[in-house]
Image 1 (cartoon, rainbow, N blue to C red):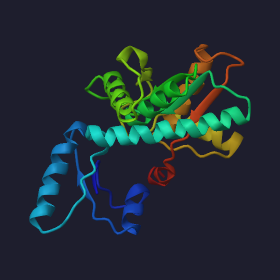
Image 2 (image 1 turned 45 degrees about the vertical axis):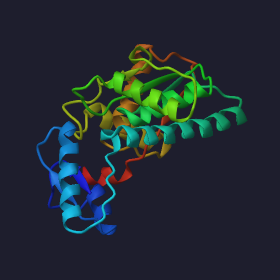
Image 3 (image 1 turned 30 degrees about the horizontal axis):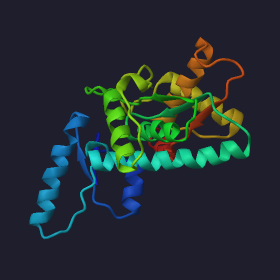
Image 4 (image 1 turned 120 degrees about the horizontal axis):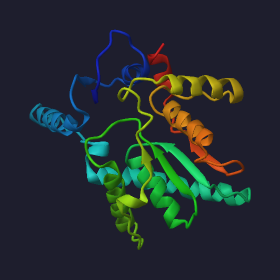
Amino acid sequence: VLVRGVKSNQMQGNFLLYDVLGAQVDVVEGENVEDIPEHLDRKYEELIKAGRKPLLIKGGFDINDSVLAGISYANAMAELDFQMKEHNFIADHLVVTAANMTQAGCDLGSKILGWPTRIQGISPVYWEMNIKEDIARICNKGAEMLNVDLDFSADMINNDNNYVGEKYGLPTSEGIASMRMLAKMEGIILDPVYTSKGFSALIDYVRKGIIKKNENVIFIFTGGGPAVFAYS
């Protein structure tokens, strides 16, 4: 596993899970997140030369991996569609903490299913690239792969990076407040990096009237539980 960040002496969060799973972890410190593919390629070549048989998964840094990941969330929208029909419910807004693949899947799935729902992504990271164009690109590739006649452009994508805070990986005071509120009221534990920032945005949208009274809202909980303990 190759991750970006700072290696800690404490075995917590994802690093604890990697250790339990027996993974060898290499940490790239102080690098721009968009430089990660270069390090992945270098590590891949090292392993090939060592006689290993690595499977290179670049996630959001490879268009094919990005599209497949996006389609998995389009599939999740199909499951959500079934649940909404079962309860005679339609969402006016769907809010998800996402920067590219996850939101692309939500946008793609909702369009395939013909929802009137506004998909609102809350980015947990600042990107140098135009993230709306990237999300639209993943949507279009996904539609092509699924043989669906849909066309997406950047102006169809709603993604807000105003809740990142100082930078990716650092909690915000608003995010921590939303964690505490939801934990006390619903017993649901958000994480400090992703969902807490997304939920704090949702609360702010309600306060500002972007999400109006009596509108139906779905908040996608994307996980992140192990990260809670890494921020103790």
